[in-house]
Length: 153
Image (cartoon, rainbow, N blue to C red; front, side, top):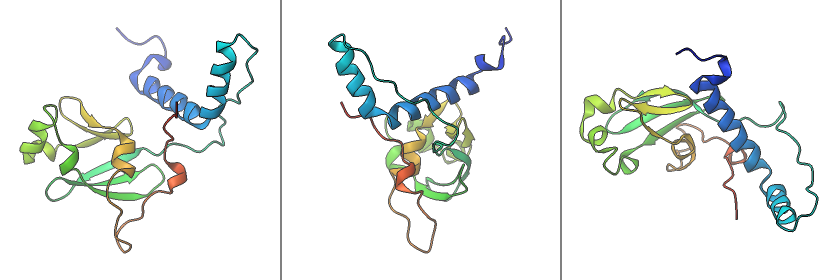
C-alpha cells in the first residue's frame, strides 16, 4: 500500500523524529521546568519551536569501508571522520558483520547513518563523536557544539 502522503514515508518519519529529538535536546532545561510546573498543575511556560536557523544535527552522507573494520564517513557538513569500528561491532547483532570481511564491506549510508544488510546499524552520534580523536594532520572532528545533547533528568 502506497503512503497517502510524503509525510508517511519512513525517511520523513525518521527526519521528523530527528528534528523532534534535536528540539528536545536544545530545550532540556525548559522541558524539565515545565515538567515540574505540570506536576504541580501550574501553567506551563512557552518553549520556542525549532527554527530554520537552528543548528542542524550532523548525519552521515557517505561511508567508505577502509582496511580492517575502519570506515571513512563524510558528514552532512562536509567533515570527514575516520573510525575504527572494531570495538563497536560487539554482540549477536554484529557478529556476522564483525566476522565476515565481505559483509562488512557492504556498508552503506542510509537515513544519516551507516547500515549493513539485515538493517544492522550504529547510531550516527556514536560514529561521529565517540571514536578516538583524529591525528592533527588527518581529518578534523566536528565542532563539539554540534554534538546532540543527552537529556539530564
